[in-house]
Amino acid sequence: MNPALFNINDTICALSTPAGMGAIGVIRLSGPDAITICRKFFEPKNVKINFEKSPSHTVHFGRFNDGDVLIDEVLVTIFRNPHSYTGQDVVEISCHGSVYIQQKIMELLLISDARLAEPGEFTLRAFLNGKFDLSQAEAVADLIASNSEASHRLAINQMRGGFSLKIGELRARLVDFASLIELELDFSEEDVEFADRSELFRLLETIKTEIENLKSSFSLGNVMKHGIPVAIAGKPNVGKSTLLNALLNEEKAIVSEIPGTTRDAIEDTINIHGVNFRFIDTAGLRHTEDTIENMGIGRTFEKMNQAAVVLYVFDITSTSEKEIDAAIADIRMQLEDPDKEIIPVANKTDMLLSSPHSFKKLVELDTLFVSAKRNENINLITERLLKSAHSGETGDQTIVYSLRHFEALTRAAQSIASIEKGFADGIPSDLIAIDIRQALHHLGSITGEVTTDELLGNIFGKFCIGK
Image (cartoon, rainbow, N blue to C red; front, side, top):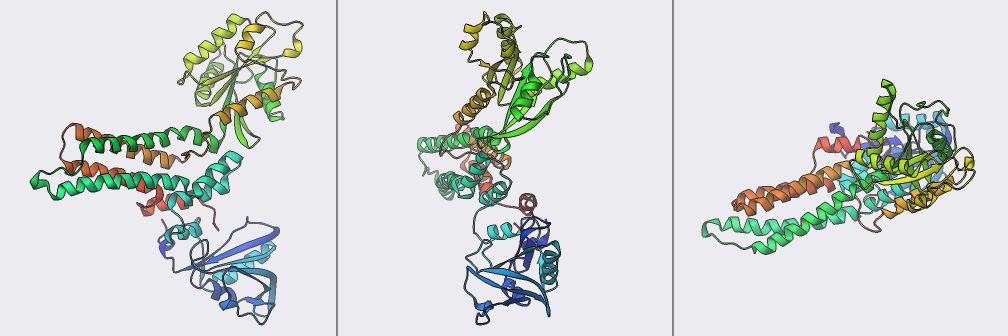
């Protein structure tokens, strides 16, 4: 990680709006000399204002000059420490969105003792100055990257500190636990037990349960953040590609009457009422001697295992009740999760001349009847998928969606298991105390109470410049 990132006495600057031409551009400075550097070039229209002594959260209109040359008329907003995003003096210059104007203002700031901010450096300074903890800082990047209502809600909840509070409660309980064990170590020669072992076991069980609950929420959080994967499976020529095109409302997949046209998975994402769904059109399931098609079928089962929901599509005009049961049973045998939701989709209803003999059985299976070719009843699929998505939501429960947090919780759970085993095996308290410290370390790494330069570099290096 760049050592300059930890020199918070530098004044940094960056363009905080997207690069290129637009209506306006916002340039941000942060650091002890932010106001002084800006004043070198900024001339307030109100000559009675002492710009350098202006109070926090005030906006000033004026000219931004390079000597006697007017660069632009701008708005300058002042945020004084500690009441700013970074906890330092911050100045934001709102100028017209000309590429030349933005570059010229940046050039003048950089030759006046400001330096260009590294990716995520403004948010890093906010973290280092105690404006929020590490998990909240990560949520800032997730909020910027959110592309659905679900991912936005996850990021907002984490940024507001709900997850941090839960981790803080777990650490507080572990600290209480550790203090009793450490007290015993101070009197180890007297063979005194200050901690009631049955009470310690109950406390450990509570902590372990809460960690497991957080870990188990990761699968839901992951799909809420990245989109819910939905595999479209079935035999060749049942209309899977046509259905994908109908769901996406575009010609994404090639449609052909030739069996086996789709030999690899085709994916695309669509937002439905605030939830991202990633639809995956897969190769048709059948026995074939074609090596390439068999590879595609192998990938079909891989995609079904990765999916949260499987749409099993069949041709209602030519598929018997027995074939449907056998196909669904075969799919379940191939799935790692036998309880995964499989939604039967009876396609080609436009070609039905009369009700199929298996109609009663199909209704019992909650089958959806559609015509992908005519785009009929496609809304039934989206409504069912939305229902499935919302059924997994847990209200106000804290949801883990970061892989880093999940891994830290997993390591903390392993340390808790070692503590329990240590007690069961009669291991001395000083060795058990090591596992307790490890558990505290892993939980602390989530909120930033335990950090390394490498960890901070990995997290903040993924931010955009200017944030």
